[in-house]
Length: 273
Ligand code: 13P
Ligand code: ZN
Image (tube, rainbow, N blue to C red; front, top):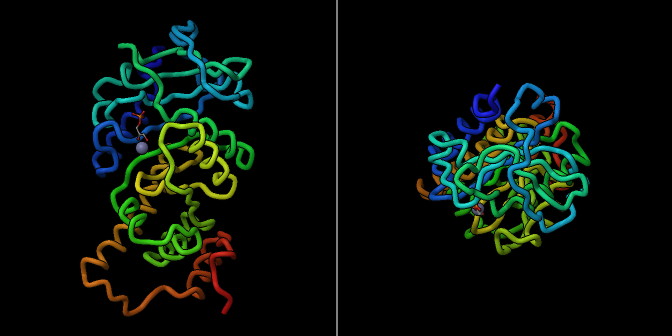
C-alpha cells in the first residue's frame, strides 16, 4: 500500500483544511506533527528508503527511531489537502537522536516546519506524562491572540476566564492553560519554554502569536484548540455586546462540573468557598 493513501495522510488533510476554514492558518501559519509507530506503518512499502537527512539542532534521543508525519515550512494549510505529498513529510528520528530522516513526502524539496524542534520537545514532555501522546498542533486562532493583548499574561487569570465563558471549557481542559512570555518563533528557546509548560498543561498560549495544543489523536487535539478558541470568541462577543457581565459561572458551579464529568479541575485556579 502507498503511504499517500493512508488514513494518517487523509486525516491530516482533513484537519489542516478544517483549521484553515476556521481562520486559524493565514498563509503558512500553523503546523502539525503526528507520531506514528512501526506497527502503524507496517503495511506501507514506500517509506523504507531514506530520501534525505537533516540535523535536528538538538538532542532528540528520547524520540530515537520514532516517526512523525509533519507539515512543511512555508506551506499553506489551505493547500495541504490538494498536494499532500509536497506539503507533508514522514520523518524518522535517527538512532542517535541527532538527525531526521525523510522517508516520504516533501517531494518538491520541502523541509520540516520551522517549529519542528518545539513540536519534538513538546512530544518528549508529554510522552513523559501520557504514553498515548501522539499529536502536537500549532495555529493562530484570532480570539486567543486578541486576548493576549487585552489580558494579563497570567495562567490562573486566563484559565478562569476561559472556564467561565462556557460550561464545556473546564470539562475539556480541567488543568487550565499554560502561558509563556512572548518569544521568537522557530527557535529552540521557545521550544524549551513550551515543553516545560507541557509538563502540566495540554494547551500553551504563545502571546501575540498563537497556541500549541497536544493530544492522543488529531481529532482530540483539534477539539481542544477549538474549545479554547470558542471560549475566547465568546469573550470577544461579550465585548462586542458592551462588555458588561451581569452573571457568571461561579467557582462552585465549576467544581460541580468537575464532579459531574469526573475531571479534576486545577485547584490552584479555583477559589475556596
Ligand atoms: P512554518 O511555515 O515553518 O510551519 O511556520 C509557521 C508558523 O506558524 C511559525 O510559528
Ligand atoms: Zn505560528
